[in-house]
Amino acid sequence: MLALAVIERQAEHLLAQGLDTVFVCGSTGESHSLTVDERLAIARRWAEVIRGTRLRLVVHVGANCLADARVLAADAQRLSAVAISALAPSYFKPRTVELLVQCAADIAAAAPATPFYFYDIPALTGVSLPMPEFLALAGTRIPTLAGLKFTNTDLLAYQLCLRAENGRYDVPFGNDEFVLAALALGAQGAVGSSYAFAAPVYQRLSASFARGDLAAARDEQFRSVQLIQRLAANGYLGAAKAVMGMLGVPVGPARLPNGNPDAAALVALRRDLEVMGFFEWIRQ
Image (cartoon, rainbow, N blue to C red; front, side, top):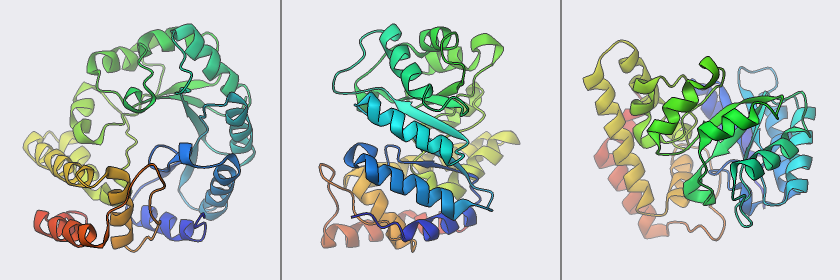
């Protein structure tokens, strides 16, 4: 059951953390564990809640069924989302860049007035195709192509994507644990799951990098590493949602096949976060 009533509190939390964009129904939003109707309901509620605020709406619309993805994309455009994004089908996988571009073009065409970002996350989709080649081909076939959500550890490819067509594309980085490396290579933005509950860490990291204080930036990056490592030890998604609850945003548990910490694990998680200094990190 969806807890749509919590979205208002979640939006208030993100605004208080200084964030300006929300990426809805992505990996952390467990899109592949939701029905199409549930995803439509979530996107519509977010659009209602953020109207009149500085928050901008980006809707992930990818699905194994391209017809479902087209429905989601068209609805996102009706909601005036600032962009849509889609990952690759991951059961029957596109085996070539050409097939991947065909899939992306099919989805993007359902929202012809909305910028489109391909969501590259090979660790979860199992689709590992060269993103520089994707941009080269997709740029000629998808009029709305704005860039990539690059959740990929291949920093060589990341550099090629940043510089494709003289920097034409927006390539936000998606690996929270080493966003500092991406900033050093020229990243201008990032999308990450832990920003929802640890945004001040990354804001200080970015500010430290911008003023040339690499020592401070590295310290903040290592805080990110410690936090994510601890959450992953419990099953990342369930633990991350539990942290949101600790911060007064009860988003509820993760759905199967993801697990959730039991009562004893929750006590241990809070204790470890307190010892780590997490609650102080996010108040600074």
